[in-house]
Length: 207
Ligand code: 5GP
Image: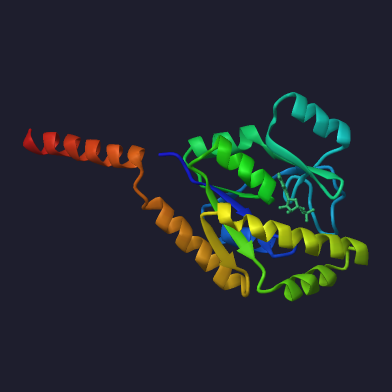
């Protein structure tokens, strides 16, 4: 059976990275690593947090159709590597993508079975405080990120689930509950497989 393709979005500094990393540490879910042309932040590692690329490398990957989707945010490019995602899902692994609302919409078009999860901050004030605590952004950039956050939150109508990131532990537990429910969800393929496996078992039981 194919693995789940989970897509987590939410305004920058909502805590997507922290929640997703903790989920990956505590479960078999694997995190997809995006490519970006932005500079690494202190502590970020190439190949772990992002594949940090030059503009030239990024453009070459686009030309080779190497991304499922790619966008430009704050003058920097971000992209989701196609081969990584496809190979993980078809080998039965659940994979989580942490991307913005534009990217998530494209992924839903290309992989309609994907599960869209929106991570919300407790409030816009708290989001501003979290961005300031990072200490990496100018006042102007913080204002840009907050107004972008409000636009992004309006896209929640296109999502399947929402989680409020008040406490990381609780947000991770909520994520696990969603994954568990999705593993038990019946869709045409799954119900056909179950029906067929019971037919085979009945035949075996009679012989
Ligand atoms: P940051 O620079 O704070 O790591 O990320 C800025 C924004 O880019 C975040 O909203 C993040 O989710 C988004 N992002 C990261 N990787 C990708 C990607 O592969 N595709 C898209 N569309 N957005 C991404």
